Image 1: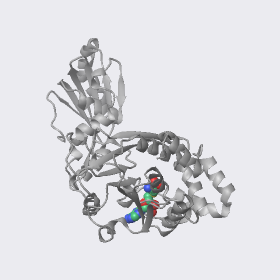
Image 2: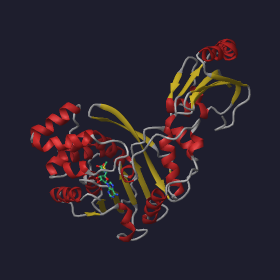
Image 3: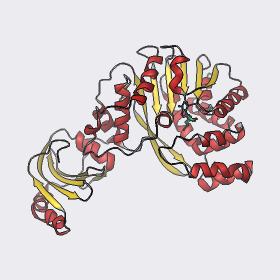
Image 4: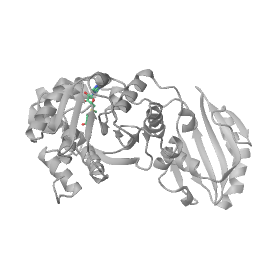
Length: 401
Ligand SMILES: C[S@@+](CC[C@H](N)C(=O)[O-])C[C@H]1O[C@@H](n2cnc3c(N)ncnc32)[C@H](O)[C@@H]1O
């Protein structure tokens, strides 16, 4: 980074050079593209975007948007704020030495060239399967006058035949692994995230991740992965896949990066991994990340949902099970209500085997009514609707039906 330039200013200057300003919303995004490049050029791209479904491995979009660098950069306005927030995170990290860096799934090189500009002493390599993306990346590097970056076209799965083992200090994937490995699908049925850990990982995933590990130089080397992981369970499963390939998330550095994408608020977790095991277990790590509010601060009347509810519930250290009921809905969907006593107040934890979670913090005075609800009102409510209801007075073991 040029002397005296603050990290944030460096990011702003870089994005300005690329004229990367975020689009306010979808309409503005497409209107601007049509205005700049003509309706005829944009129509197939619009079509490819609308047909894009989760799990699709089509590279159509990357072929179409990378017809030339101008179009490629204009299209990147979709993600301009994502780049800005990720770069802000990157420049704020301590960088003892930049060394040699690999950007996998580099596309048009926006991230790769940023790193190369940030670390002029380093050697940066970008790789992408799509030849037009690589051509745009090369043109971008030339335009920016960068001499420490090179790009090549390859399927990342073949990198071990092209690159030397233990030759990189950093590997970076910005939204790329989950495109190479198939987009994240809904997690299988589970009552708690713990049930999803230690499962066997697809051979193709393990092969790719082990190859990444082999490219890392030493124990100080890092793999940074910033992917779309929509659920707590998918973040945990991703960390578990990495772990099974010998890449361990450093949970102290894991965090969410929030950004706007065509007007929508989004956030994605960023993981820094190393080849040596981390002190913190995956479950503890994800619960810390998703339940960032302290469990000690549980306030009577508070209500938490989804990942935060699960994370907070499991982070309550001292709690005693009081009572529970399980309701069986059609198609093997089940829900449990459980009442627990914590050191400060009773809590009601409601969870299903299909991912819903809710945590209500009750006041001490609510306990008697809540117990009565468990014995009478709740079972009657669901039985009257024809559902099977089971009351239990001992904590169910994980996964138990
Ligand atoms: C969502 S884009 C991310 C691009 C870039 N990292 C960024 O954030 O600007 C995913 C990229 O991965 C590339 N890709 C998908 N499968 C690949 C593979 N098997 N090998 C190399 N690149 C791949 C695509 O061509 C695409 O450019």
